[in-house]
Image (tube, rainbow, N blue to C red):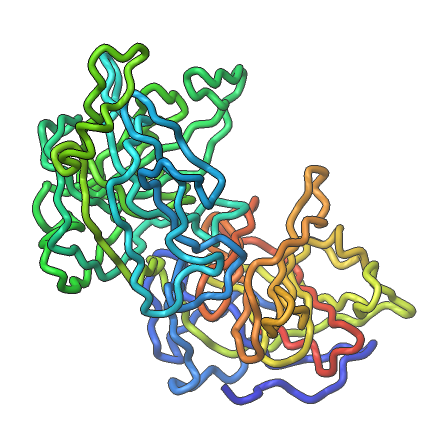
Length: 496
């Protein structure tokens, strides 16, 4: 994209810069690509020249994009729970018990997650997860296998709202893959692999922890996409070794397509109403179920698995074989539009000095009403810049301003090059001091802030890499602010 910024130097006088920003359709609505269709946010300035069609960016907002990479370490990384009596490389495992052989929390990708087009393979037999087993009077689905899962990088501080989001991926099921038939909440069923999500933990008031029943004073809900049990929803079939593209929309009006896993002995699992659960997602992946418990060694007390019987005919008792997937993407249910607006920077006070060494005095924009779908965006390649939104314009103390994001040329890890996108969020006292690495940064990456109906999200090349909780009405009035490292050349490259 050409540089559309004025070359005026920023100083004490009011400077007007042509900037792009929130030119985005409201959340939940589709945006037109017609330049004349973009509705301006409430602003003290009239719209300037709008972007021509060839300058409009991809309007897609990705909650997770397989080809993106460069996220916070171990977020976007894939795992499973696989049966193993060896020392667990992850350091986390389960011993032999009455329901399952010993197992490990297992790495499926390295710390950076999959690269573009990588197949991620999961091979059984898997741990028999008892957290959702059927118990008298309970609401548990039954025993399950955890085939593959990852924590959403965007949901570190605040869970993701996946209302109307589209989840797409390719799968391969190999001919060696076979499953058992087992009882469940939906009856005696042959086990299949299903798309799965889990909500972020929700605190429980007036609660006493009790490890014996898994009471940690939080609640989480798990759902699997079973649909009408037709092959459409069965991720594991057919077992031909051929790649199959799949796509599912998380439609809040289609709650009957989803089955809650409920609680077994672990009481922390519940069944939040589906339309609420999809607004609080933190983990996604694949679950196989229902599955059988292991055969019990006759006369054992307490009961333990009969490993000799299992080794003699593993597929009689467990799901076995290999299933793989790639290009796991989550596309949000709203789109962005782009248009150009004038942004007025207010005068910098005489002798103003920021509270952070090496960073320039904070420059504020005029108060602006941000609707869902609008936001701020950096012009790529403008040096190390810190920017965000503030409720006032009277401080040079970064910790008293508001949510902020900055790019800097500090290597995320020694020797890998590039820079970082960092976010600064609130601490327990309400000040903005929690500084966290969110994603890698390379010159040319598009970094921005986007308002949604309930959060302020950080975007890198259209993908959400962080989410700030947002506590304001539907339309929020804030002052954009920005600062640069003093050794960084260039202007304040904000656009909105």
